[in-house]
Length: 589
Image: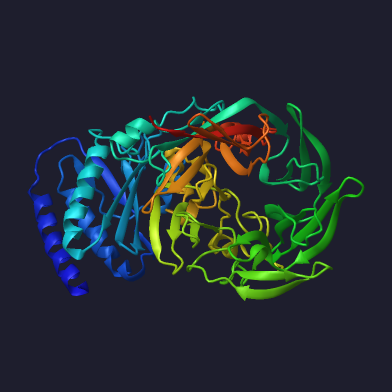
Protein backbone atom coordinates (compact mmCIF):
# COMPACT_ATOMS: atom_id res chain seq x y z
CA UNK A 1 0.00 0.00 0.00
CA UNK A 2 2.79 2.39 0.91
CA UNK A 3 4.65 1.85 -2.39
CA UNK A 4 1.41 2.29 -4.31
CA UNK A 5 0.77 5.65 -2.70
CA UNK A 6 4.32 6.87 -3.39
CA UNK A 7 4.14 5.89 -7.08
CA UNK A 8 0.77 7.59 -7.52
CA UNK A 9 1.99 10.76 -5.80
CA UNK A 10 5.13 10.91 -7.95
CA UNK A 11 3.06 10.61 -11.13
CA UNK A 12 0.77 13.37 -9.94
CA UNK A 13 3.68 15.67 -9.05
CA UNK A 14 5.06 15.40 -12.58
CA UNK A 15 1.71 16.22 -14.13
CA UNK A 16 1.12 19.07 -11.72
CA UNK A 17 4.46 20.75 -12.39
CA UNK A 18 4.03 20.37 -16.14
CA UNK A 19 0.59 21.89 -15.97
CA UNK A 20 1.95 24.81 -13.99
CA UNK A 21 4.59 25.53 -16.62
CA UNK A 22 1.96 25.60 -19.36
CA UNK A 23 0.08 28.42 -17.70
CA UNK A 24 1.35 31.58 -19.37
CA UNK A 25 -1.60 33.88 -18.79
CA UNK A 26 -0.60 37.16 -17.21
CA UNK A 27 -3.29 37.59 -14.54
CA UNK A 28 -3.37 39.02 -11.05
CA UNK A 29 -1.67 36.50 -8.81
CA UNK A 30 -2.46 35.46 -5.27
CA UNK A 31 0.85 34.47 -3.73
CA UNK A 32 1.03 31.57 -1.28
CA UNK A 33 4.01 30.69 0.87
CA UNK A 34 4.16 27.35 2.69
CA UNK A 35 5.50 26.28 6.05
CA UNK A 36 6.33 22.59 6.62
CA UNK A 37 3.25 20.55 7.52
CA UNK A 38 3.11 19.08 11.01
CA UNK A 39 3.06 15.28 11.35
CA UNK A 40 3.37 14.90 15.13
CA UNK A 41 -0.06 13.21 15.19
CA UNK A 42 0.12 11.53 11.79
CA UNK A 43 1.04 8.10 13.14
CA UNK A 44 1.62 5.61 10.32
CA UNK A 45 0.86 8.31 7.76
CA UNK A 46 3.82 10.52 8.71
CA UNK A 47 5.83 9.34 5.69
CA UNK A 48 3.25 11.01 3.42
CA UNK A 49 4.01 14.55 4.60
CA UNK A 50 6.39 15.58 1.83
CA UNK A 51 4.30 13.80 -0.77
CA UNK A 52 0.99 15.35 0.24
CA UNK A 53 2.47 18.83 0.65
CA UNK A 54 4.32 18.66 -2.67
CA UNK A 55 1.21 17.43 -4.44
CA UNK A 56 -0.86 20.25 -2.94
CA UNK A 57 1.80 22.79 -3.95
CA UNK A 58 1.87 21.50 -7.53
CA UNK A 59 -1.91 21.44 -7.86
CA UNK A 60 -2.18 24.99 -6.52
CA UNK A 61 0.63 26.22 -8.77
CA UNK A 62 -1.29 24.87 -11.76
CA UNK A 63 -4.34 27.00 -10.95
CA UNK A 64 -5.08 30.35 -12.56
CA UNK A 65 -4.21 33.43 -10.48
CA UNK A 66 -2.23 31.41 -7.93
CA UNK A 67 1.53 31.66 -7.43
CA UNK A 68 3.37 29.52 -4.91
CA UNK A 69 6.45 31.25 -3.52
CA UNK A 70 9.27 28.76 -3.90
CA UNK A 71 11.41 29.69 -0.92
CA UNK A 72 11.42 29.71 2.85
CA UNK A 73 10.41 32.74 4.90
CA UNK A 74 13.46 34.49 6.33
CA UNK A 75 13.71 35.89 9.86
CA UNK A 76 13.83 39.52 8.70
CA UNK A 77 10.71 39.01 6.63
CA UNK A 78 8.98 37.41 9.60
CA UNK A 79 9.78 40.45 11.71
CA UNK A 80 8.40 42.77 9.03
CA UNK A 81 5.27 40.65 8.77
CA UNK A 82 4.90 40.64 12.55
CA UNK A 83 4.74 44.43 12.51
CA UNK A 84 1.93 44.20 9.97
CA UNK A 85 3.90 45.65 7.08
CA UNK A 86 4.60 42.53 5.06
CA UNK A 87 6.91 44.53 2.77
CA UNK A 88 10.15 43.66 1.09
CA UNK A 89 13.29 45.71 1.64
CA UNK A 90 12.33 48.59 -0.64
CA UNK A 91 9.50 50.96 0.13
CA UNK A 92 6.37 50.33 -1.88
CA UNK A 93 7.27 46.73 -2.63
CA UNK A 94 4.38 44.23 -2.48
CA UNK A 95 4.08 41.69 0.36
CA UNK A 96 6.10 38.52 -0.10
CA UNK A 97 2.81 36.60 -0.11
CA UNK A 98 -0.92 37.03 0.38
CA UNK A 99 -1.27 33.94 2.56
CA UNK A 100 0.93 31.73 4.68
CA UNK A 101 -0.20 28.13 4.23
CA UNK A 102 0.15 25.88 7.25
CA UNK A 103 -1.04 22.31 7.53
CA UNK A 104 -1.02 19.10 9.48
CA UNK A 105 -1.59 15.40 8.89
CA UNK A 106 -3.56 13.37 11.43
CA UNK A 107 -3.73 9.60 11.51
CA UNK A 108 -7.35 8.83 12.37
CA UNK A 109 -8.77 5.39 13.04
CA UNK A 110 -10.82 5.89 9.85
CA UNK A 111 -8.02 7.19 7.63
CA UNK A 112 -5.82 10.21 6.94
CA UNK A 113 -7.06 13.69 7.86
CA UNK A 114 -5.27 16.55 6.06
CA UNK A 115 -5.97 20.00 7.48
CA UNK A 116 -4.79 23.23 5.88
CA UNK A 117 -4.99 26.77 7.27
CA UNK A 118 -4.44 29.95 5.25
CA UNK A 119 -3.26 32.86 7.38
CA UNK A 120 -3.78 36.14 5.50
CA UNK A 121 -1.18 38.89 5.52
CA UNK A 122 -3.87 41.56 5.21
CA UNK A 123 -5.49 42.62 8.48
CA UNK A 124 -8.97 42.78 6.94
CA UNK A 125 -8.96 39.15 5.81
CA UNK A 126 -10.19 36.15 7.76
CA UNK A 127 -8.22 33.01 8.54
CA UNK A 128 -9.37 30.23 6.18
CA UNK A 129 -9.55 26.55 7.20
CA UNK A 130 -9.86 23.42 5.08
CA UNK A 131 -9.97 19.70 5.79
CA UNK A 132 -10.22 16.39 3.94
CA UNK A 133 -10.36 12.81 5.17
CA UNK A 134 -8.96 10.12 2.89
CA UNK A 135 -10.08 6.61 3.72
CA UNK A 136 -8.11 4.75 1.02
CA UNK A 137 -4.94 5.50 -1.01
CA UNK A 138 -6.99 5.33 -4.21
CA UNK A 139 -8.88 8.50 -3.28
CA UNK A 140 -5.91 10.53 -2.03
CA UNK A 141 -5.16 12.28 -5.32
CA UNK A 142 -8.80 13.15 -5.94
CA UNK A 143 -9.19 14.43 -2.39
CA UNK A 144 -6.08 16.63 -2.58
CA UNK A 145 -7.22 17.98 -5.95
CA UNK A 146 -10.57 18.86 -4.40
CA UNK A 147 -8.76 20.48 -1.47
CA UNK A 148 -6.68 22.59 -3.86
CA UNK A 149 -9.81 23.72 -5.67
CA UNK A 150 -11.50 24.78 -2.44
CA UNK A 151 -8.39 26.69 -1.36
CA UNK A 152 -8.24 28.57 -4.67
CA UNK A 153 -11.93 29.48 -4.55
CA UNK A 154 -11.59 30.84 -1.03
CA UNK A 155 -8.26 32.61 -1.61
CA UNK A 156 -9.42 34.57 -4.66
CA UNK A 157 -12.73 35.42 -3.05
CA UNK A 158 -15.13 33.38 -5.17
CA UNK A 159 -16.17 31.24 -2.25
CA UNK A 160 -15.52 31.86 1.42
CA UNK A 161 -14.43 28.99 3.61
CA UNK A 162 -16.89 28.89 6.50
CA UNK A 163 -18.73 26.53 8.81
CA UNK A 164 -21.53 24.47 7.31
CA UNK A 165 -24.16 26.55 9.13
CA UNK A 166 -23.35 30.25 9.64
CA UNK A 167 -23.86 31.29 13.24
CA UNK A 168 -25.28 34.61 14.36
CA UNK A 169 -23.68 36.38 17.28
CA UNK A 170 -23.76 39.67 19.08
CA UNK A 171 -21.63 42.59 18.00
CA UNK A 172 -17.94 42.46 18.83
CA UNK A 173 -17.30 43.21 22.46
CA UNK A 174 -20.87 42.57 23.59
CA UNK A 175 -21.75 39.66 25.83
CA UNK A 176 -25.50 40.00 26.10
CA UNK A 177 -26.83 36.86 24.51
CA UNK A 178 -26.27 33.19 23.97
CA UNK A 179 -26.53 31.82 20.47
CA UNK A 180 -27.82 28.50 19.19
CA UNK A 181 -27.80 27.47 15.54
CA UNK A 182 -31.28 27.38 14.00
CA UNK A 183 -32.35 23.76 14.50
CA UNK A 184 -34.84 23.42 11.65
CA UNK A 185 -32.39 24.65 9.00
CA UNK A 186 -29.76 22.25 10.29
CA UNK A 187 -32.17 19.34 10.39
CA UNK A 188 -33.52 19.91 6.87
CA UNK A 189 -30.02 20.10 5.40
CA UNK A 190 -28.89 17.00 7.25
CA UNK A 191 -26.36 19.09 9.16
CA UNK A 192 -26.64 18.62 12.87
CA UNK A 193 -24.80 21.61 14.27
CA UNK A 194 -27.13 23.01 16.89
CA UNK A 195 -28.98 19.80 17.60
CA UNK A 196 -28.38 17.13 20.20
CA UNK A 197 -27.87 13.99 18.18
CA UNK A 198 -29.36 10.74 19.30
CA UNK A 199 -32.53 12.45 20.55
CA UNK A 200 -34.53 12.86 17.31
CA UNK A 201 -36.82 15.85 17.33
CA UNK A 202 -35.00 17.57 20.20
CA UNK A 203 -32.75 20.62 20.13
CA UNK A 204 -30.85 22.52 22.81
CA UNK A 205 -31.46 26.23 23.22
CA UNK A 206 -29.37 28.33 25.63
CA UNK A 207 -30.57 31.68 26.93
CA UNK A 208 -29.36 34.03 29.65
CA UNK A 209 -31.68 34.55 32.61
CA UNK A 210 -31.87 38.05 34.00
CA UNK A 211 -28.90 40.38 33.97
CA UNK A 212 -25.26 39.42 34.16
CA UNK A 213 -23.12 40.13 37.22
CA UNK A 214 -19.55 41.32 36.84
CA UNK A 215 -16.62 42.96 38.54
CA UNK A 216 -13.41 44.54 37.25
CA UNK A 217 -10.07 43.28 38.55
CA UNK A 218 -7.07 45.66 38.42
CA UNK A 219 -4.65 42.98 37.15
CA UNK A 220 -4.59 40.44 34.35
CA UNK A 221 -6.26 37.18 35.32
CA UNK A 222 -4.42 33.89 34.91
CA UNK A 223 -7.20 31.52 35.93
CA UNK A 224 -10.22 30.88 38.12
CA UNK A 225 -11.82 27.99 39.99
CA UNK A 226 -15.40 27.62 41.22
CA UNK A 227 -16.19 25.82 44.48
CA UNK A 228 -18.49 26.15 47.49
CA UNK A 229 -15.92 27.55 49.90
CA UNK A 230 -18.22 28.39 52.83
CA UNK A 231 -20.73 25.53 52.64
CA UNK A 232 -23.76 27.67 51.80
CA UNK A 233 -24.52 25.74 48.61
CA UNK A 234 -23.46 28.58 46.31
CA UNK A 235 -20.19 28.36 44.41
CA UNK A 236 -17.58 31.00 45.15
CA UNK A 237 -14.85 32.00 42.70
CA UNK A 238 -11.14 31.69 43.44
CA UNK A 239 -9.19 33.95 41.08
CA UNK A 240 -5.47 33.81 40.32
CA UNK A 241 -4.39 37.25 39.09
CA UNK A 242 -0.76 38.30 39.03
CA UNK A 243 0.83 37.50 42.38
CA UNK A 244 -2.50 37.33 44.22
CA UNK A 245 -5.04 34.62 44.98
CA UNK A 246 -8.45 36.15 45.66
CA UNK A 247 -11.90 34.91 46.64
CA UNK A 248 -15.10 36.39 45.21
CA UNK A 249 -18.67 35.72 46.28
CA UNK A 250 -22.01 36.24 44.56
CA UNK A 251 -24.07 38.71 46.55
CA UNK A 252 -27.44 39.41 45.00
CA UNK A 253 -26.79 41.24 41.74
CA UNK A 254 -23.14 41.93 42.49
CA UNK A 255 -19.85 40.06 42.74
CA UNK A 256 -17.89 40.98 45.87
CA UNK A 257 -14.30 40.30 46.88
CA UNK A 258 -14.19 38.71 50.33
CA UNK A 259 -10.57 37.60 50.75
CA UNK A 260 -7.12 37.96 49.21
CA UNK A 261 -3.60 36.67 49.77
CA UNK A 262 -0.23 37.37 48.17
CA UNK A 263 1.74 34.43 46.83
CA UNK A 264 5.35 33.90 47.95
CA UNK A 265 7.89 35.96 46.06
CA UNK A 266 8.92 34.52 42.67
CA UNK A 267 6.12 31.92 42.68
CA UNK A 268 4.36 32.01 39.31
CA UNK A 269 1.03 30.21 39.10
CA UNK A 270 -0.20 28.80 35.80
CA UNK A 271 -3.35 26.92 36.90
CA UNK A 272 -5.75 27.06 39.83
CA UNK A 273 -8.32 24.39 40.68
CA UNK A 274 -10.47 23.53 43.68
CA UNK A 275 -11.73 20.16 44.93
CA UNK A 276 -12.42 18.38 48.20
CA UNK A 277 -9.93 15.52 47.90
CA UNK A 278 -9.36 15.04 51.65
CA UNK A 279 -13.11 14.50 52.19
CA UNK A 280 -13.48 17.03 55.01
CA UNK A 281 -16.41 18.75 53.34
CA UNK A 282 -14.38 21.81 52.32
CA UNK A 283 -12.55 22.32 49.02
CA UNK A 284 -8.79 22.68 48.84
CA UNK A 285 -7.18 25.03 46.34
CA UNK A 286 -4.58 23.33 44.16
CA UNK A 287 -2.22 25.94 42.76
CA UNK A 288 0.10 24.55 40.11
CA UNK A 289 3.11 26.84 39.99
CA UNK A 290 6.81 27.29 39.37
CA UNK A 291 9.52 29.23 41.17
CA UNK A 292 12.27 30.09 38.75
CA UNK A 293 13.06 26.88 36.88
CA UNK A 294 11.63 24.60 39.57
CA UNK A 295 8.11 23.29 40.04
CA UNK A 296 6.76 24.74 43.30
CA UNK A 297 3.06 23.94 43.53
CA UNK A 298 0.94 24.63 46.60
CA UNK A 299 -2.15 23.31 48.36
CA UNK A 300 -4.15 26.01 50.15
CA UNK A 301 -7.24 25.98 52.35
CA UNK A 302 -9.64 28.81 53.11
CA UNK A 303 -12.27 29.40 55.78
CA UNK A 304 -13.91 32.47 57.26
CA UNK A 305 -12.02 32.29 60.54
CA UNK A 306 -8.48 31.79 59.23
CA UNK A 307 -8.59 33.06 55.68
CA UNK A 308 -6.09 31.51 53.27
CA UNK A 309 -3.77 28.93 54.87
CA UNK A 310 -1.03 27.10 52.96
CA UNK A 311 -1.08 23.43 54.01
CA UNK A 312 1.63 22.24 51.62
CA UNK A 313 4.20 24.17 49.60
CA UNK A 314 7.17 23.63 47.26
CA UNK A 315 5.54 20.53 45.79
CA UNK A 316 7.65 19.20 42.92
CA UNK A 317 4.63 18.17 40.85
CA UNK A 318 2.41 20.14 38.52
CA UNK A 319 -1.00 19.56 40.13
CA UNK A 320 -4.56 19.18 38.91
CA UNK A 321 -7.69 17.56 40.41
CA UNK A 322 -9.06 15.20 37.77
CA UNK A 323 -12.27 13.19 37.49
CA UNK A 324 -11.24 9.65 36.53
CA UNK A 325 -14.09 7.32 35.50
CA UNK A 326 -14.41 4.47 37.95
CA UNK A 327 -12.17 6.22 40.50
CA UNK A 328 -13.90 9.54 41.11
CA UNK A 329 -12.05 12.78 41.79
CA UNK A 330 -8.31 12.21 42.21
CA UNK A 331 -5.22 14.38 42.28
CA UNK A 332 -3.10 14.03 39.14
CA UNK A 333 0.44 15.23 38.65
CA UNK A 334 3.29 15.55 36.18
CA UNK A 335 7.00 16.17 36.72
CA UNK A 336 9.37 18.50 34.91
CA UNK A 337 12.27 17.10 32.91
CA UNK A 338 15.88 16.75 34.01
CA UNK A 339 17.31 19.30 31.57
CA UNK A 340 16.94 22.96 32.49
CA UNK A 341 14.80 23.80 29.49
CA UNK A 342 12.71 20.62 29.72
CA UNK A 343 9.67 21.83 31.62
CA UNK A 344 7.65 18.62 31.27
CA UNK A 345 8.50 14.94 31.52
CA UNK A 346 6.48 12.17 29.92
CA UNK A 347 3.94 10.54 32.17
CA UNK A 348 0.89 11.69 34.14
CA UNK A 349 0.31 9.98 37.48
CA UNK A 350 -2.40 9.74 40.09
CA UNK A 351 -1.14 11.00 43.45
CA UNK A 352 -2.19 9.73 46.86
CA UNK A 353 -2.63 12.36 49.60
CA UNK A 354 -2.03 11.58 53.28
CA UNK A 355 -3.59 13.58 56.17
CA UNK A 356 -0.55 15.90 56.24
CA UNK A 357 -0.96 16.56 52.50
CA UNK A 358 2.19 14.69 51.58
CA UNK A 359 1.95 13.19 48.12
CA UNK A 360 2.86 9.71 46.96
CA UNK A 361 3.17 8.68 43.33
CA UNK A 362 0.52 6.22 42.20
CA UNK A 363 -0.40 4.62 38.90
CA UNK A 364 0.44 6.16 35.55
CA UNK A 365 -2.56 7.04 33.42
CA UNK A 366 -2.70 5.29 30.01
CA UNK A 367 -2.99 8.33 27.74
CA UNK A 368 -2.16 9.08 24.10
CA UNK A 369 1.36 10.29 23.36
CA UNK A 370 2.39 13.92 23.87
CA UNK A 371 -0.43 14.66 26.32
CA UNK A 372 0.39 16.92 29.25
CA UNK A 373 -1.42 17.30 32.56
CA UNK A 374 -3.72 20.17 31.59
CA UNK A 375 -4.47 19.00 28.04
CA UNK A 376 -7.28 16.48 28.54
CA UNK A 377 -10.56 15.40 30.13
CA UNK A 378 -12.45 12.12 30.23
CA UNK A 379 -16.02 12.30 28.90
CA UNK A 380 -18.64 9.71 28.00
CA UNK A 381 -19.52 11.41 24.73
CA UNK A 382 -21.78 8.69 23.32
CA UNK A 383 -23.43 7.52 26.54
CA UNK A 384 -22.20 3.93 26.29
CA UNK A 385 -20.55 3.95 29.71
CA UNK A 386 -17.06 3.91 28.16
CA UNK A 387 -15.36 7.32 28.41
CA UNK A 388 -13.53 8.94 25.53
CA UNK A 389 -10.46 11.14 26.03
CA UNK A 390 -10.84 14.69 24.75
CA UNK A 391 -7.64 16.70 24.37
CA UNK A 392 -6.39 20.09 23.19
CA UNK A 393 -2.88 20.05 21.76
CA UNK A 394 -0.24 22.75 21.50
CA UNK A 395 -1.65 23.79 18.11
CA UNK A 396 -5.03 24.48 19.80
CA UNK A 397 -6.67 21.54 18.04
CA UNK A 398 -9.28 19.52 19.90
CA UNK A 399 -8.98 15.75 19.49
CA UNK A 400 -11.16 12.81 20.50
CA UNK A 401 -9.61 9.42 21.30
CA UNK A 402 -11.37 6.15 22.07
CA UNK A 403 -10.45 3.87 24.97
CA UNK A 404 -7.73 2.23 22.88
CA UNK A 405 -6.18 5.71 22.40
CA UNK A 406 -7.05 5.64 18.70
CA UNK A 407 -7.59 9.09 17.23
CA UNK A 408 -11.20 9.51 16.08
CA UNK A 409 -11.45 13.20 15.22
CA UNK A 410 -9.47 16.46 15.04
CA UNK A 411 -11.11 19.89 15.02
CA UNK A 412 -10.64 22.34 12.18
CA UNK A 413 -11.29 25.25 14.54
CA UNK A 414 -8.93 26.33 17.30
CA UNK A 415 -10.07 25.75 20.89
CA UNK A 416 -8.58 26.53 24.28
CA UNK A 417 -6.17 29.18 23.05
CA UNK A 418 -4.01 30.33 25.96
CA UNK A 419 -1.24 32.81 26.75
CA UNK A 420 -0.16 30.87 29.86
CA UNK A 421 2.80 28.51 29.71
CA UNK A 422 4.85 26.48 32.18
CA UNK A 423 7.91 28.03 33.74
CA UNK A 424 9.15 31.60 34.10
CA UNK A 425 8.09 34.32 31.71
CA UNK A 426 10.30 34.74 28.70
CA UNK A 427 13.40 36.72 29.65
CA UNK A 428 12.80 36.65 33.42
CA UNK A 429 15.05 33.69 34.27
CA UNK A 430 18.14 34.77 32.33
CA UNK A 431 21.43 35.07 34.18
CA UNK A 432 24.61 34.25 32.28
CA UNK A 433 26.66 34.06 35.51
CA UNK A 434 24.31 31.76 37.45
CA UNK A 435 23.92 28.23 36.07
CA UNK A 436 20.76 27.80 38.13
CA UNK A 437 19.15 30.15 35.63
CA UNK A 438 19.03 30.19 31.84
CA UNK A 439 21.45 31.66 29.38
CA UNK A 440 20.07 33.89 26.65
CA UNK A 441 20.40 31.03 24.16
CA UNK A 442 18.69 28.54 26.47
CA UNK A 443 15.82 30.93 27.04
CA UNK A 444 15.43 31.43 23.30
CA UNK A 445 15.65 27.72 22.52
CA UNK A 446 13.29 26.37 25.16
CA UNK A 447 9.98 25.00 23.98
CA UNK A 448 7.09 26.83 25.57
CA UNK A 449 4.50 24.38 26.91
CA UNK A 450 1.19 26.23 26.93
CA UNK A 451 -1.60 25.41 29.37
CA UNK A 452 -4.75 25.10 27.20
CA UNK A 453 -8.02 26.70 28.19
CA UNK A 454 -10.16 24.68 30.56
CA UNK A 455 -12.46 21.95 29.26
CA UNK A 456 -15.53 21.31 31.42
CA UNK A 457 -17.57 18.13 31.08
CA UNK A 458 -21.33 18.52 31.59
CA UNK A 459 -24.63 17.03 30.48
CA UNK A 460 -26.83 20.09 30.09
CA UNK A 461 -29.65 18.23 28.33
CA UNK A 462 -29.45 15.25 30.72
CA UNK A 463 -29.54 12.68 27.93
CA UNK A 464 -26.69 10.60 29.35
CA UNK A 465 -24.21 11.86 26.76
CA UNK A 466 -21.72 14.35 28.10
CA UNK A 467 -20.81 17.58 26.35
CA UNK A 468 -17.61 19.63 26.52
CA UNK A 469 -17.66 23.35 27.35
CA UNK A 470 -14.53 25.16 26.17
CA UNK A 471 -13.22 28.58 25.16
CA UNK A 472 -12.55 29.57 21.57
CA UNK A 473 -10.14 32.50 21.43
CA UNK A 474 -9.54 34.07 18.03
CA UNK A 475 -6.28 35.51 16.78
CA UNK A 476 -6.16 38.58 14.56
CA UNK A 477 -5.29 37.89 10.94
CA UNK A 478 -1.68 38.91 11.46
CA UNK A 479 -1.58 36.78 14.60
CA UNK A 480 -0.38 33.85 12.53
CA UNK A 481 3.08 34.37 13.91
CA UNK A 482 1.71 34.01 17.42
CA UNK A 483 0.97 30.34 16.80
CA UNK A 484 3.23 27.33 16.65
CA UNK A 485 3.44 27.84 12.88
CA UNK A 486 6.56 29.92 13.46
CA UNK A 487 8.32 29.02 16.69
CA UNK A 488 10.15 32.35 16.78
CA UNK A 489 6.90 34.11 17.69
CA UNK A 490 5.10 31.31 19.51
CA UNK A 491 5.82 33.01 22.84
CA UNK A 492 3.99 36.19 21.79
CA UNK A 493 0.42 34.91 21.49
CA UNK A 494 -2.31 37.47 21.20
CA UNK A 495 -6.07 37.21 20.72
CA UNK A 496 -8.64 39.73 19.54
CA UNK A 497 -11.84 38.08 20.83
CA UNK A 498 -13.19 34.93 22.40
CA UNK A 499 -16.34 33.01 23.23
CA UNK A 500 -17.45 29.98 25.22
CA UNK A 501 -18.95 27.11 23.23
CA UNK A 502 -20.75 23.90 24.09
CA UNK A 503 -19.85 20.88 21.95
CA UNK A 504 -21.55 17.50 21.58
CA UNK A 505 -20.42 14.30 19.83
CA UNK A 506 -22.44 12.78 16.98
CA UNK A 507 -20.33 9.64 16.64
CA UNK A 508 -17.99 11.21 14.09
CA UNK A 509 -17.37 14.86 14.98
CA UNK A 510 -17.89 17.35 17.80
CA UNK A 511 -20.71 19.75 16.89
CA UNK A 512 -21.46 23.11 18.43
CA UNK A 513 -24.83 23.26 20.18
CA UNK A 514 -24.58 26.64 21.92
CA UNK A 515 -22.20 29.50 22.41
CA UNK A 516 -21.95 32.89 24.06
CA UNK A 517 -21.64 36.18 22.27
CA UNK A 518 -18.15 37.48 21.61
CA UNK A 519 -15.95 38.82 24.39
CA UNK A 520 -13.46 41.47 23.36
CA UNK A 521 -9.83 40.52 23.98
CA UNK A 522 -8.98 37.18 25.55
CA UNK A 523 -10.87 34.65 27.68
CA UNK A 524 -8.37 33.61 30.33
CA UNK A 525 -10.54 30.98 32.03
CA UNK A 526 -14.12 29.96 32.69
CA UNK A 527 -16.19 27.85 35.04
CA UNK A 528 -19.59 26.19 34.84
CA UNK A 529 -21.94 24.51 37.27
CA UNK A 530 -25.37 22.97 36.87
CA UNK A 531 -27.61 24.15 39.67
CA UNK A 532 -29.65 21.86 41.88
CA UNK A 533 -32.19 24.59 42.42
CA UNK A 534 -33.31 27.53 40.34
CA UNK A 535 -35.80 30.34 40.77
CA UNK A 536 -38.58 28.00 39.72
CA UNK A 537 -37.63 25.60 42.50
CA UNK A 538 -35.90 22.84 40.56
CA UNK A 539 -33.10 22.45 38.07
CA UNK A 540 -35.12 20.36 35.64
CA UNK A 541 -38.67 21.29 34.76
CA UNK A 542 -41.00 19.60 32.32
CA UNK A 543 -43.35 22.21 30.91
CA UNK A 544 -45.38 21.06 27.93
CA UNK A 545 -42.86 19.62 25.45
CA UNK A 546 -39.88 21.49 26.87
CA UNK A 547 -37.24 20.20 29.30
CA UNK A 548 -35.27 22.88 31.10
CA UNK A 549 -32.09 22.86 33.14
CA UNK A 550 -30.34 25.75 34.84
CA UNK A 551 -26.61 26.42 34.84
CA UNK A 552 -24.21 29.14 35.93
CA UNK A 553 -21.36 30.29 33.69
CA UNK A 554 -18.30 32.18 34.99
CA UNK A 555 -16.09 33.96 32.45
CA UNK A 556 -12.70 35.56 33.12
CA UNK A 557 -11.88 38.03 30.36
CA UNK A 558 -8.88 40.27 29.62
CA UNK A 559 -10.47 42.99 27.43
CA UNK A 560 -7.33 44.77 26.23
CA UNK A 561 -5.36 41.67 25.28
CA UNK A 562 -3.99 41.93 21.77
CA UNK A 563 -4.65 45.65 21.39
CA UNK A 564 -2.44 48.73 21.57
CA UNK A 565 -4.32 49.67 24.75
CA UNK A 566 -2.63 46.74 26.51
CA UNK A 567 0.67 48.63 26.28
CA UNK A 568 -0.63 51.56 28.33
CA UNK A 569 -0.13 51.76 32.11
CA UNK A 570 -3.10 50.49 34.10
CA UNK A 571 -4.67 48.74 31.11
CA UNK A 572 -4.00 45.15 32.19
CA UNK A 573 -7.31 44.74 34.01
CA UNK A 574 -9.71 41.81 33.82
CA UNK A 575 -13.45 41.27 33.92
CA UNK A 576 -15.15 38.51 35.89
CA UNK A 577 -18.68 37.96 34.58
CA UNK A 578 -21.34 35.55 35.87
CA UNK A 579 -24.42 34.44 33.92
CA UNK A 580 -27.44 32.37 34.82
CA UNK A 581 -28.28 30.11 31.88
CA UNK A 582 -31.36 28.16 30.96
CA UNK A 583 -30.96 25.17 28.67
CA UNK A 584 -34.12 23.89 27.06
CA UNK A 585 -34.61 20.73 25.06
CA UNK A 586 -37.65 21.28 22.87
CA UNK A 587 -39.55 18.57 21.08
CA UNK A 588 -40.10 19.41 17.42
CA UNK A 589 -43.68 19.54 16.27
